[in-house]
Image (cartoon, rainbow, N blue to C red; front, side, top):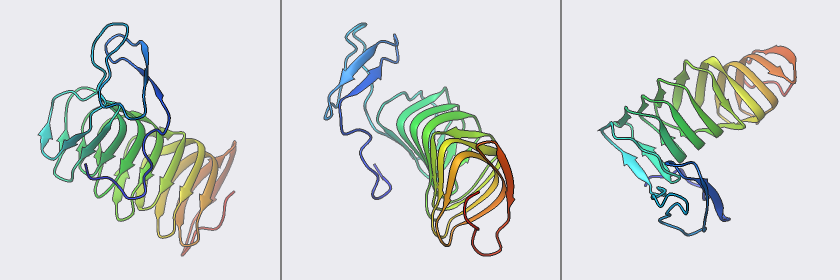
Length: 200
């Protein structure tokens, strides 16, 4: 599995995972590679998947799913612990951690706890993206807007364009933001000619 450098494991402690079949909660040890639901007996998928071509078979896992540059997932709702997209995701999705890289293309809505835009990526999103936190290291233009309940971090050399709603925004030196931002109910328009002025 091709993972971004310096990403932490999905969990360092036992996790409580819901069975995809019956919805019951099960405790999963840190190093578990398989898990059977104690209530219905069906397997709870912890596997990692790599999509490098067209893929239409349903994926629901608490592991990692990697969609390569030439990969396209087209099917029912994709569920993953960590979802890394460099290619095309043509389906609704649910992920604890969403990682966008290269020329990632999303055609549907989804949910994520955290959003990462990798360095070197150039992404344009039409839909509204909601998350608890967002880390922008590449180029992201959002048409629908970002709704972040926590903090957005714009890294050095990164660019974020579009409407943003957030509890807080942190722009590192050399980061760039342009658009309308609403922080805790206060709207302000930030335009940047070189580097973004600091938070409002």
